[in-house]
Image (cartoon, rainbow, N blue to C red):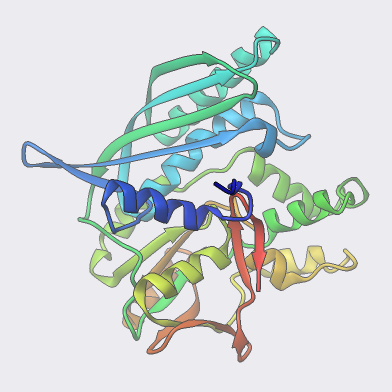
Length: 321
């Protein structure tokens, strides 16, 4: 038998294998289960510190980030995370103070997000790994990933910051541009992501507007291609969901492709909603920006061409065509 490594297969294809084996067809940011007539929302999310921790991030930051990552998925599905348990694998030579940092990060992140951190499981291994499993309450039924034709896509105009930091870091240029405001803000977003669970009540007022949603943890390109493929629709990006402050700040940095860092960023943890066109004014009042439209057809298009950026895919990396 010829051995085939996971590297190169890609997270998306591996998830398809899992779902074929366990015999489930739908993929969503949350899973919904029925227990004695009550619907619960559940989610597990994890990270390896050897691949996810950047030099400017502490163990406290990683605990906070892990808790924020799972909570972000609840927000986009208009659900409230209530309780979390955490499985932690640590190297035996890790410093005890760093372990305390990690637990404090998990606890303070949970407190900030209104989640009760109950405890969990502890193991020793060759890498530091954090897995957070949360359970909560869906507040507005099940929202999937299939946009309606005629919808508009809206999001917070806060893209670019994290993609900029990733690009500079992997190009070994982060220190060179560290004093640029957009870089400093991108670092802070990566260290302490803050999903806006406080907006849930406002969003619930417009539940009937929403047909689909995802969060941008794996990049905006991944969101758009997933919605297009799952919904069997064509998505046309009309403008980049960025703000003027970011564009002004990043203009001083040479050799940066704005489109790449916007579409192939990730870890912004910003919600993307597909909504009815007549609901745009209400969402704009909440701070959202319409940036794309949903049409008959297939694929994702920007400036008249197929969008080449496809976001982050584990076992492949940043993907483009």
